[in-house]
View 1 (cartoon, protein in one colour):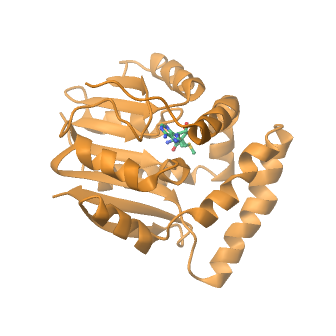
View 2: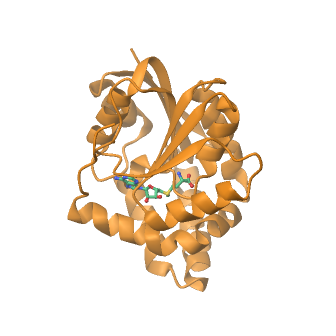
View 3: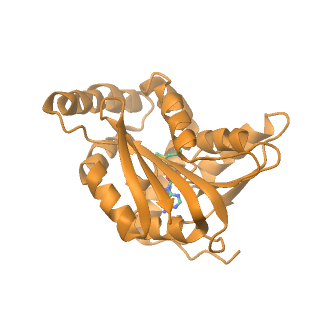
Length: 238
Ligand SMILES: C[S@@+](CC[C@H](N)C(=O)[O-])C[C@H]1O[C@@H](n2cnc3c(N)ncnc32)[C@H](O)[C@@H]1O
């Protein structure tokens, strides 16, 4: 494994934001998606084509939800690396793992998704949940993912998505404004959660994500889910 480089100032602001959110992240996530994020994460695992015995990567793993599911899928003969640059969220992930018996085979790695500390062609499969929208350089993140995946390996990237239909779009905005931000406000995190809507506005559409993935060298398909309000970008390294 090679060493990772330091994060940029803009990225450090994002990291600080996630460090502040860490204590309530899981609670808010479960409440605000009515537990549905669990279903979407299972879909991502399926699309990652993870198999028993695989070495899997969960990028931007946060508190470790998706990494734990990936670990279940690769089983005791496999191994998962959960990578994030928020030390506070990784600590939540570590504590979660310690509560499980038998302990899942997960290495929690504090690193920048834009400078991954792994060799080329190392991973059999990868997942990423709600991370791509948050990285400061999407093409670079996809290029790093391409570099570390083995030829023929799949990655599944789950995130919010702007639905093309005006009605669903309006519903999504209403949901963010009237459910997400007030819930965060109750926990004293208004500013931290107000970032979701603008980050979604900047986030490439499904078609644009496919084009970016192709530029990184992947074959790619984007699957809208949850009536287009979420999406999974499935990439395959040729
Ligand atoms: C919205 S959270 C998602 C966490 C988790 N994957 C989940 O689905 O619950 C986004 C995560 O991306 C991480 N992140 C953002 N940019 C990153 C980067 N450049 N390198 C590593 N982690 C990053 C944040 O620290 C945060 O944990």
